[in-house]
Image (tube, rainbow, N blue to C red; front, top):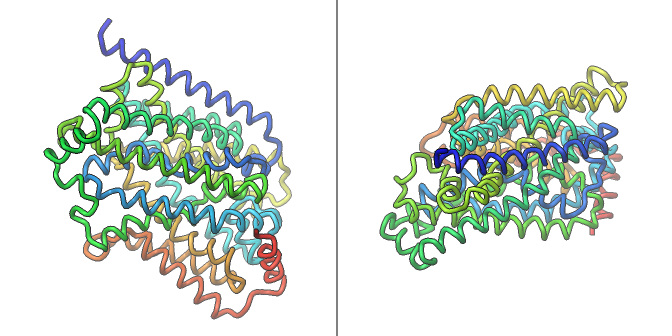
Length: 493
């Protein structure tokens, strides 16, 4: 038996066990799913720990274990500004938005999706808000889901030498299985387990790597010799580029899969504990990813040591760990990928089943029918995303960055204004979503020169300006809308 086979068998065994556990969780959640509200939002019964860690896992995706370590490996500590911006953004999202959105979505006709919340919040009888926001969700989740599937295919291909297309199919099949069966509860429970696995891997890999290199001083010394600029957080950076990287944090306010956890948490009283758990997990995870990429420079003899910088995490695991341990740690990469794709599929499914099918095609559809429509749309969207991910050369970080910017600019300013500003109107919300989304798309198409700034920043600013301007032009919101806003404000601690 070859050495390669000796290594691959333990890896394969641990992967298979992990995937079976995920499907079993989906089956358990299937038994607890009885209505569309259960399937899309878990019946609003998530505890603080599950809400916090599932939000973190669904948010971070494969880029935490592939994209961010790869960026640090390729460019050094100058990439830490992404982590700084994300940490600030995540904290502010929990602090400013979570409680208000949880209260508002329940009070506004028990809204279970972001498009439904916006329609109900502003009493939009034309359904324009619901349709436009649902279309934005479907557009940008196409790129987001494709990024995750590219990462899954790369993982299987790199680990087992499996053909990329076959690897892509395996990863997609498992994710579709448990998401289709168990809906939001399956997604949240599996994300909770996946967050724990990701956390352990991101602490263990950099610690073992740095120890193997002789300690922090030795590691930093080797990096300084190989890539002197890698030690400097300001190397080749300008204020313009630092602000652009930190602008990633603005994206949190508009991510539908993260906002869904706020809407699903059991009670507003659970939010402070969830905030502490979620932000603590995030800080350790981000810095684990950063030090993984940094230590990889020393371990592989410079940034030219790997053909693909985004495989640094996986390459370190395969080089340093026993095959059985390596299998468990590599499963963390799959966990990161799956935890985001499943949430994206579910939010996209809700946009089709709740915001299109129920609203326009079958207004009188019962819960059982809607749940099965939701499952069918998960399958359909998953197949489309898999076809779009057939290009193995697509960079995970680039795809995620585009989708993150799209959601952050389209929904971020509108969500913030909707929960904080009494004078926000339906026209302002619609203008903010359209302006933010169009700015991101246009800015990306015009890349170069001043347009090298990350597109979320101009998109967020212009979306916010449009939301305020059009709200003021159209006059005050109705008395019922203002009374509802005042009820939410009165209930906020």
